Amino acid sequence: MGVRAAAVPSRRGFFPKGGGRLDLVCHPMPAGERVRPLLLEERGEVAEQLVRVVFAGAAAEAGAAAVGVAAATALGFPGEAMEVFTSAAAAAGASAGRSGGGDRRSRDKGRNGRGGRGGRRGRGGHGRFMAETAAEAEGSGAAAAAGSGSAASKHRASESVAEGAGGSAGMRWRCELIGPEPAACSGVSVLVGAMTDNGCVLTRSAPIGGREDPVKAGRGLARELFAELAHGGCVDEHALDQLIIWMALADGESRVRCGPPSLHTTTAADIARVFLPTVEITFEPIAEGKHGHVAVVKGAGLSPGSVASARAP
Image (cartoon, rainbow, N blue to C red):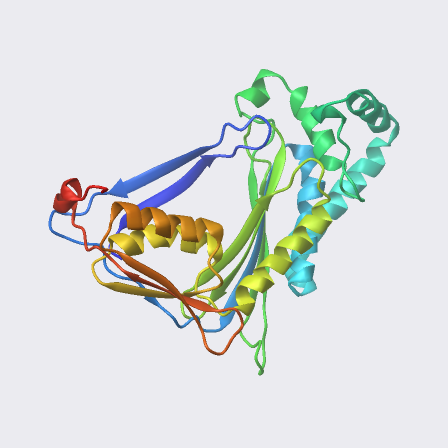
């Protein structure tokens, strides 16, 4: 579309302390230029799938590995692609076995016996890890608050490529485990994604909360990604609600195949119509079904020099 911008996360932020930082770099468009319309209706075939898990707090690694294994398994990853998660889970289990359970049970009782957020207990085999790592972060003092961390962050990855003939030939599966990251408190986030041979990227992501079972969370994200792929769209719902604004600014008609428009998407469309009365935005159902739509936007064609003259009614 002719827009030059980049966003780089320079610091992670997890609930409840936050403190994350995202660095944005935007290059102004030259005077007289306009945003180009976006034409994206052919998704192509899925060529690569990704599971990326980021964690802060060394003790959160077991839960991070658990959610990674759950998501990758639900997406049908082969075992060798998940090696980065399974080896981390095995190492965390061995470490827990060596340290023994007495001190941990005592700490759980002391930390979780009280009410409020500190009293919430996770569910499932790995559900307790967030409460434990939150307690660890709480005791780490100023170093944790400053985000310095006690261990260097590592970016580990494993992947597998399908060989031979058939529909899956050449398919790449990739798993990434990143951490422990510097952060003000412990936490885990996971992203699952699918990339196509036509350059389309569809993702789902979520933080793993203190009361969530990471295994259930990983499986849930996999189901959400399957739903995104089922409707045949070229972008996921979260990308679409951001693109609507740019398509409204563009010079000409944009067409993007997508799923059913979310409330965020229809709200973005309503706001665009208020500020740019000449814009036309429709969501056309696709005849063959699968809940597919095409977002059609006839943009206002604004240029940097004309923005000041575009006023809301």
